[in-house]
Every structure is written in C-alpha cells, then in structure tokens.
Amino acid sequence: MIRSLTKTAVVFFLTPAVFLGEKPKSLKSFFCVPVSPSEWKLQRYPPLIDPKAGTTYVEIWSSGMMVERVKLRRFQRNRDVMYEYHYDTAGKLKSLQASLHYWGYWVAEAELPLSGETETGLKTVHYYKARAITGEQVRETMNNPEEKGRYLNELNAATHWMTAQAVPCADKLS
Image (cartoon, rainbow, N blue to C red; front, top):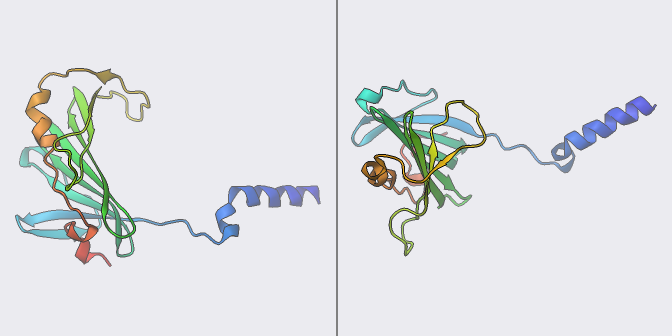
C-alpha cells in the first residue's frame, strides 16, 4: 500500500502538466536554403556547410504554421555569423540577437535594436574567448580582441524580418 502511494506521489510531482491538462509544446525544425538570390527552398535536414562557398541558411522552429524562433547563419572562410529572431504569438519580432564567431579566437554577442526604435547601431557587444571545450559554462570575457573593428558592421547587418511571415520559407510551412 505504501509502495503504491509512493509511486503515485512521484508520478504526480514529476508530471504536473498532465494533471493540469497542459500539453508540452512541440516545435518542429525546418531548414531553408537559398536556391537563387530571390528564391529559397524548404527542407527537413540541415545543409552541408562549405565556408569557402559562403554557405547561408535559415533554421525555423515552428508549431504548426506559427513561427516562434528563427536562426539565420552565414559561414565564411574564418568566421560564422548567426542572427537569432524571436517572435511573439502574433508573429511580431520581439527580440533579435547576433553573434559572430571568429574561429579559434573570439566570439562577439550583441542584442540588436529592432527597426523603428530610436537607437541606431549595436547595443552593448560582449566579447568572449573562443571556447576550447564544447559545453563549457563559464566563458572568459575579453575587452578588446584583435580585428574586431573589421567585423562590427557584419554583426550589425541583420535582415530585419519584423514579422514571422517575412521569414523565407515561412509560407511553405504546413
């Protein structure tokens, strides 16, 4: 009797969403790759990355037709730039972050202002030493990494998709 009550208590405390009638949100991931300067193709698998060719792709997380998060990634010979877009339930852009990874040296991260705000340019940019170990939680900050001035414009060059419908391939989601 005590054993069955213990099992019931454990199940109750570990899965409160089941008892409250909530369903966990399941987001599906899609990839969108450029076929031409004006056309994009939707696929379920990530593209092959060739930094020499300047690979660009968009990863879209959605629940049904609703786009929730988007990552635009651009790879170059010695770096990659990532812009992360977050949308609210109405499909409006609520935040935009950018990061530039100068391979083997440093990482720059910034919160970008949304279009229409009075601020122009980058908000505070944080620089970190490139992590040697994947999954490392503490990152050592840097004040003035070499060659940062060459890449600040690239960090700030995000395409402002103000609505989820403006994201490439968003109209192809089903």
